Amino acid sequence: MTTKVENADVSRRDFLYIATGAVGAVGTALAIWPFIDQMNPDASVLALASTEFDLAPLEEGQGVTIKWRGKPVFIRHRTPKEIEEAKKTPLAELKDPIARNLNLPPDAEATDENRVKDANGKVNEKYLVQIGICTHLGCVPLGEQGDYDGWFCPCHGSHYDSAGRIRKGPAPRNLDIPPYKYTSDTVIVIG
Image (cartoon, rainbow, N blue to C red; front, side, top):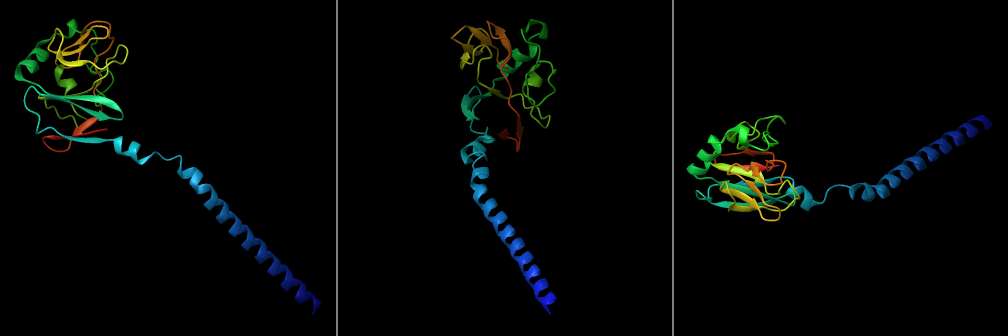
């Protein structure tokens, strides 16, 4: 009979060890979870990951500046004259022949069409969407100014044309085009 009692104690002891280990593991996981969860992005950061903007209220010739990921984004409803000037500019005259459009391959040419193409390949030449940070030292250029009816950075004298391409001054690159796409004829999502 003593054999059965010893086996009963061994199996009860095994159960207690397993139960204690399981409760300890769950308790440890619950204690560690707040530390792991605090590494997730803040809700305000997630909200800025993408921005929706309705282009319909913009009148021809009007531009607005919105924020996306803490950066200014210039959105301009270009006039037919601005579009025509941008289209007829020979690529050989550009300081930077690359489109700098995150929706296109990195080596895409800086044609006017490539500067207004969204992530789905849609071209809407009326609206130019670009990050409003000068590529020289990170200043914010002024709109509708400069020698090319585009943007002018008064800090160091960089002139951008109506397609946001650098034409004159110390800036080495065109203004960057953020990743964006049209969700309707007049609504875009940036990011």
